[in-house]
Length: 249
Ligand SMILES: O=C(CO)COP(=O)(O)O
Image 1 (cartoon, rainbow, N blue to C red):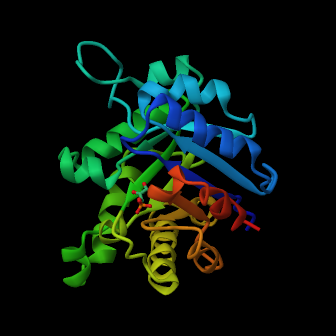
Image 2 (image 1 turned 120 degrees about the vertical axis):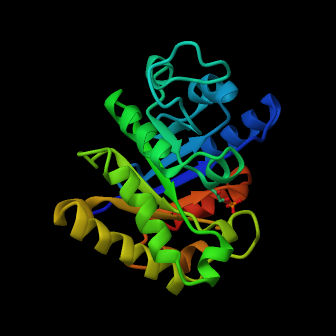
């Protein structure tokens, strides 16, 4: 099927100028598989985007962690998709569970954001995932399907979308999904896309996993047939991010 492996590093709300420079130096010096084998995208906080973009090796790319839902204007504190395009930022993460849960972003709002960002020419890492409560009540597949539907309802072209499955109970907890748990949801998401979007999209969209991925557990997860990469939080701030990139091989 030829889906290129994708490794994203979500730095979240972390870092000082010095720390950011250090991470970028580590990445720039790393021996990793070529850009033909893996897409590497790191996502610093907005304020560090220009710095990271100017220092980062040219085969790695940057993503913003969010953007405004429509054209910019009188929206204090927001950053528009147009601004990211203006700075040459190619990617944006949309719908991360921390924004869904802590900032009350609804699935519909996220669908609108994905559509607007794509319309401006950005590539989107769109996140879905269930809470522990939802998993324990057996509604995981319903939840991730509904979150994916809210995106599918608003877009017609998936070429520039990477779908990130991030179970909330695995984020920052050290409790990684087992390879079987991840594979099950990834396969179901692909089935959902096949049925509700198209066979082509189901076959070509990369579905990446996020939640307590580290240098030790990445290899086994990467071996799952429907798992096309990772969105890494905590470990993306450490040198072991390089080992996660290497799991593409
Ligand atoms: O939320 C995540 C990436 O977006 C995952 O975070 P952790 O890797 O820290 O669990």
